[in-house]
Structures are given as structure tokens and as C-alpha cells.
Image (cartoon, rainbow, N blue to C red; front, top):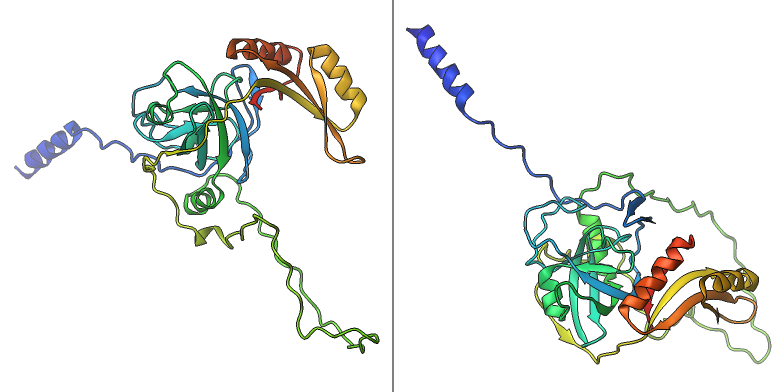
Length: 297
């Protein structure tokens, strides 16, 4: 009887479906270079990234798939995809055409089109006034403190960043000299004044509180500032190289910086429509200028 009961237990155990493996947790990643839409992208950690360009709206309206860093895609959440930013990161997005502004969580790679700087989730696009299947001129800016807090608080599978120890400081001999005639000696060391508009950086990423995984829907409005579309190609330290590329692309050279430290940027435009900008970008990419992109100015 004991053997029969044991056999029944084993048979029943074999019929019980195995429990699914636990879902992987969200990770902090930078990632290796990859090719998407015929263009290579090189991810990097950048807590000060700003820029302009065209936004697209994610076509995937179904929830459940995994994003590049292991999070679950939810079209009703305020998320976005970027080609090179560390994941996740908090990005402030401004629709330059209507002035609407919103923070999104970048947790995926994209857009597939090299002519778009950001791919917005369905809900983020709705709040910013970007129509499904359409585009909008946007400005983006990484929010440094919350993005650093995410980087510090999530597990990472990549090689950890190197910690450089401070060099040992030896004893330094000092001799006080009498001030020259007519000069008054300061009683304390003068502290450098911060530059106008500068903010003190948080010491240690853990000092900031990490934002929630699902960002609140806080939309603000600024003055609309639509601009002209350009295709920005390469930037050179030599004028002759810039002139050569501009002639090949049908663009022009813009000089930047003070004399002696000038750089030479190649641009095509202004362009009258998104379709014209897309054609100019496609021509630049075919000509081998892989860093070409659409910007708003």
C-alpha cells in the first residue's frame, strides 16, 4: 500500500505544471554598439545631454514586451526610446510647436528611423500633443539628479565603473611672509564664487531620491518656439575638410567658437518640410556621413 500511495503522489507531482521562472528585474545598462535602421549607434552615459530634433510615436500599443533594460513596455506609461542614452534615464521633453513639456522615462532603444531623435509612448505623445503616426519638433534635456539616482539604485550586469582613489597627500612646509607695504593681509582664504546660473552638484548619486518607475502625469506649458529644420552633418577642426564635405552634400559651413579655437560645422537647410528633411538626411547617410541628424534651430 505504501508503495502504491507513493506512486500516486509521484504521478500527481509530474502532472502539476512547473512554475514559470521569475521575471527579470529592471537593469541599468549602457550597452554595446548596434545597428538599427541601417545606421550604427554607440550608447554612452551622458547625464548632461540636450538637443533638438523630431519625435515619433511608438506604433506598438500592446503592453507586455520587455524593453532593452528588462522593464515591461506599457503604452499608458510615460516612457520613451532613445538610441544612445543610458537606460533608464529621466528626460524632459518639450514640444516646441505648442510649448507642452513633460518628463519621460527612457527605457528602450529606438527610434527605428534615424531621422527621429526620440520615440514616445502612446500616452506621452497624447499629453505632449503629438499625433499618432505623426511627428513634432522637440527639445530634450536629461534630468541629471534623478537619472543619476536611477543609475545608483538599479543593478547592472555590465563592467562596473572604475573608482579612482585620491592620491596620498604628504606634509607641505609653509612659511608666512610679511605683506608688501600698503597691502592688507587676508584673514581667511577667499572662496571662489559660483558661476552665474550654476548649481551645486549632488555629492554621491545616492543623495538624490530615485523617481518612481511610473512617472506622474505633470504637464507644464512654456512659450511655443518652433524652428527651421536642418540636417547637421559633421563638425571639423579644419575649414578645408568642412568645405569639401559641404560641397559633396550641397550644404554650407558654419563657423563656431572664438578665433584660434574655431570649429566648422556642415549643415543642409533650412528645409521646408519633414519630408524634405528626411530626403536630405537619407542623401547624407548614403554619402557616408553616419553622424548626420535632423535638428531644429
